[in-house]
Amino acid sequence: MSSSNTTHPAVLCHGDAPWEVSAVPRPTPASSEVLIRVLACGLCGGDSVLRSGAGSTYPLVPGHEVVGVIEELGENVESAVAGRKEGSPWKWRVGMRVGVAWNAGKCGECHYCRNNNPQGCHMAHATALTRHGGLATYKTAHHTALVPWPEALPPTQAPLLCAGLTVFNALRNSRACKPGATVAILGLGGLGSIAVPIARALGLTPIVISHSPSKRAAASELGAAAFIDGKDAALAERIRGAVDKPWGGDGPGGVDLVLATSPEGETMEKVCEALAMDAEILLLGEPPSLRLSLPLMPLLLKRASVRGWTAGIPSDAYATLLFCLEHGIRARVRTIPLKDAEQGYQDLGKEAGRTVVVLEDA
Image: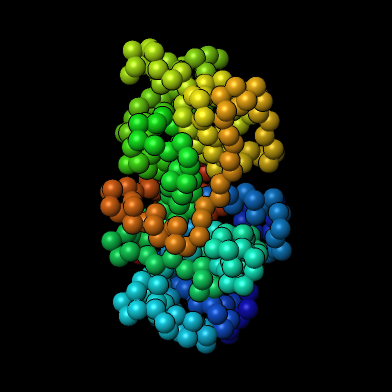
């Protein structure tokens, strides 16, 4: 971290080892960056990528679901947004609440930026992987990585910047996302718990598949049409039965969409036996091995497709926040202090919801 004469507490990741809280120099924003005073930062299963050592230089501050207040503008930021209308939520100024997600910004000049696909820009990958994240009192961010944060949302809804964004963006860009379609949601952790109400709001019928029977009540509260134990030996049959029940047993015989928030080999193989024609499998997470094996014949016979999806760009994140505000959707969260970030990371997935580190009264 670059520096001033003052220090502040931050969580540091040194690779595959427990996180530790240390005093680090307060960062100074570069010319195209802003300095953010962090209010809250969500924990995510994606933090395991940083922990694995993929593409990172240590020590690095984790956390890519960041909400805070702009404290300082780099010398070029004001001129970069000067052409935006007064009152625009994208016209950055000191005192604004903003979010920072996985996407770390864009250069505006590369092939992907020129072709309106900045998710492929080398700068985009990624907050808390190639640059410091938000588990700290202060962080800097490139101004193109900022997301306007609506005043109606408390900072503790930071997981909407990752879990909410990933689910909403994947679904709205899926060719199989149509009113009345059935979606199997694998896992009811941080991603799965927000996927259920978002799917409902998009007109889909969500079926939750989880290896944690204790989450059955939570699935029902969130609006799932059915809950199926992922360890059930007759999993494919159970899925087909749940899908076809409204049709008197004579329905499509499988799900139109699979949201694999927690992909696991054996479960995925069984789910592939319960696909509707032209189904789409969306991979939103990764198993510990970072590898997945799927049976080919069900995909061929059902003309099914498999697609990976990671979050989105700031405009996608803002669209997610507005959608959730409009439909009354909120992430289920529990809050912890910075000193408990490591334990919070270890507890990920144990509950139906997300853990948020609160750095101020958020």
